[in-house]
Length: 398
Figure 1: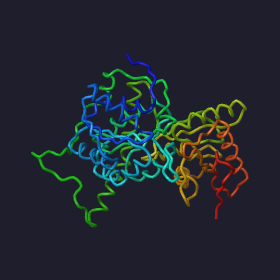
Figure 2: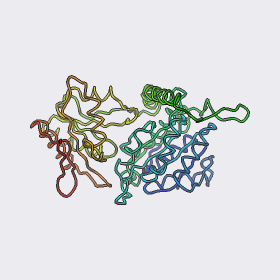
Figure 3: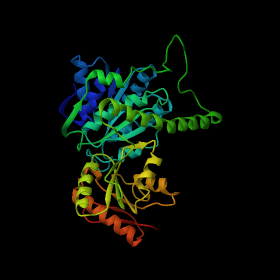
Figure 4: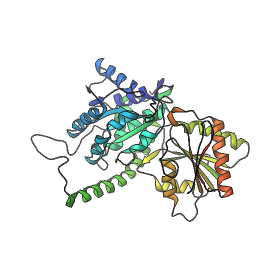
């Protein structure tokens, strides 16, 4: 029988790794991710988890160790945050190009400078084009669920790509919430033992990551892109299989009270739950509003996003990262691109907030909705607006 316990998202992810019976963990502690490797190290030391824990000297070394473990067919897990993910950056590309299905929990943290240990999505957006499957969690339950799901999808022979499970630093990593933990037999039914089809074996020598001259490099990268896009079918299948066993169903794009709504707010991560309260408040006032929670970031869910937004007049996109010199936030840029060729598309307005761990209140989200609707109705040339700071900063089209 499943049990309900209080866990912060960090420990929820560690529990998922334990129940997945990982073989190798290589991680270096960095705020706000530290509780994950600490908990896993305790599990290994206490005999709760039969795994090799590799205490490395940096995040670059952590992911490098994971490459070697995954190459020989080990189920491999790591975790990082912010500057740690940036120190891994060189190796992040290698993991996806080599098709190693490593699972990594990313406790989203703002990038320096100024120095910040608090959460936003600048680290996640810095690695959006590295070829990893990326999903965002709203709460601790989802941190557990998505970590299990990540092993199931990434290790599928039709996929074989690494997966990042994103959850917000401090807002989730250090906040205790009720989490339903399943029985081990249910996890075993959902997650078969990992059999890597290309595992290195001295008795059957092969080459991984050989030198790629110009006459083959393009073909290799296009093949990687084709395979990566095809993984979306398995991603959706994995969501369904998870729901069939555990009773919690997920979608790449999740809708909240969007039916018939003329104004939609799009969010990612833990702030989606705060935004839902703002939607409820406005619904109670008779306003035609709804929320889109973008769960799957890579591969991008074009079809689902277009379907969700097709009948709206205004789509307000809330980013937790600045795309310096660009048209607002990186998420809004992708949304505009995804909707560009649609005959019927909403006016898209970009708002940026929650940077460096700054809170966004329900009132802040109510303002974002009202202001976004006003910009579209007036046909304003304002392209983006930064909220939740001392004063208002608005970007104007040049």
